[in-house]
Length: 251
Image (cartoon, rainbow, N blue to C red; front, side):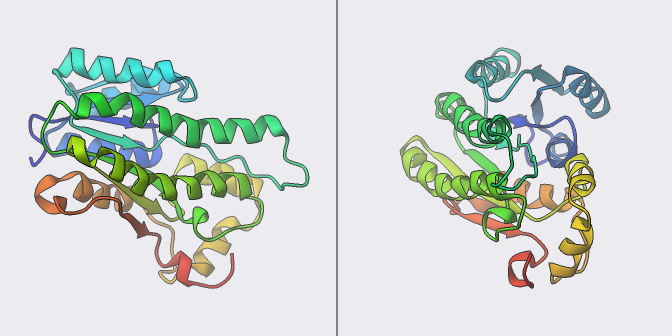
């Protein structure tokens, strides 16, 4: 129960990696606030995770959602200790034909939404000891893949922002790190597989570990980075948890 008495905010937490992170935090004693765009998914997720979980529904491209979630944590649990920025969207498309409305949406959720979450949470985190932020990025942000250019660009930007935020927030006692996740079994992967034929086989063939990750395999390193006892001297780092995807063959 290493997070007993702590409160965490997890964005994009109604399913997939975010849900797995929230479940792991609850199992370790934390109170958890979930955010996502669709309230129905949050209702189901919070019911599955138990009484120490609540939620705030809203569009992560709207700064008001982040501010409401932080305020909810403060009002409901008397403060905020941990932030996990997981909300993201993947809309496959070539630069030759992807509608700019889709480009705007991916940038809005993945980049603007994450910036808004960190900005909203930082003042609340600064009021508590041993606070930490973990940003979920993607191996596509390090190793380009055809058809995922805009998504990869937003994740590459987060790789830059993690050490920037670590530098800016160090004086407030807030550690900031990232987890660069490889392709993981999530509803997003299912949608991507339908849009990009052969995506699963491509990823498995490229990984050094010849399979796709379970969401729990991403959640465990996230908890390590959040834990002050395990990672007190770690900030500004982005850990690659990708099955060796970046070391394999061409995507």
